[in-house]
Image (cartoon, rainbow, N blue to C red; front, side):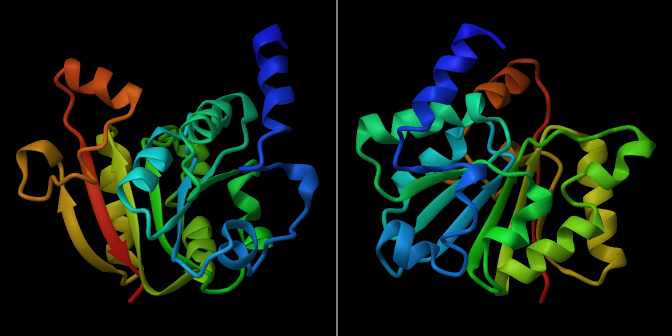
Length: 216
């Protein structure tokens, strides 16, 4: 492991806005009241990477709590450090595998979920690893409040099409679907948040796909 990674792992251990694996599940069912010390809605970003979207959402909506989830601590270090340095109190980070989501959140505890530019897992043999595979969707359904939205923003056309197909097959409610977000009527200040990698995709003239759906 490189020196930078070791330094980042050591540093996030000192951040009050990061909960790591060894912390267990002290906030399950109580994230708003216990971790954020308020009663505001809780919004998750799954596979948040460097946490750019999480931090930007928190800056836009001070009346909501945002939690970025990723397994790689050296990635979430960037978003967590930015939040600490800028005093953004309504953002936190959780270092876990997304497969264990239900161990960390109570039933219907979450108001909304964002999945922004996840690994598309393009090989057929890795379908079960896709974050919109039905097994994952069942976990989201458990933690989401009734009517809570799931947002998928991706540059990968195949993942977009796969997810749209699952939405139809499972009888979920589709609210928004576009294969070219920035040339659609749906672009707004939330969807206009651009991560480092998204900016690179756009420079290469790559279209950005977006889906918004719910379980009811």
